[in-house]
Image 1 (cartoon, rainbow, N blue to C red):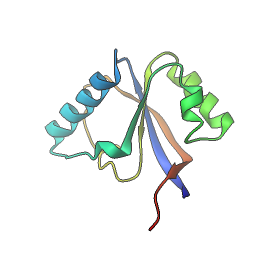
Image 2: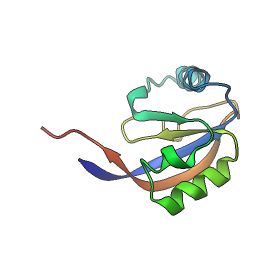
Image 3: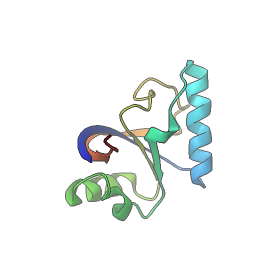
Length: 106
């Protein structure tokens, strides 16, 4: 089932998805948070195609243009980290956008 949701979008320079996830875990630990990484998506450049899984075409292009060649991190509802952790300025906030997420229904 596709549900409308607010998605926090961050960007930063990371050589791999693993390094982006490691940075999120380190930043969350310093703040005392325990993020659910099942609710975090790491999208490396080129972004637009993967972002279309969450956003309409115009929003996906806007986010990709803002991120340039940086890695994009989508913080989905339930991740337990939105706007509350210190990333040592390695991540910048692009914004919060309305998109769609997929959830299984019983």
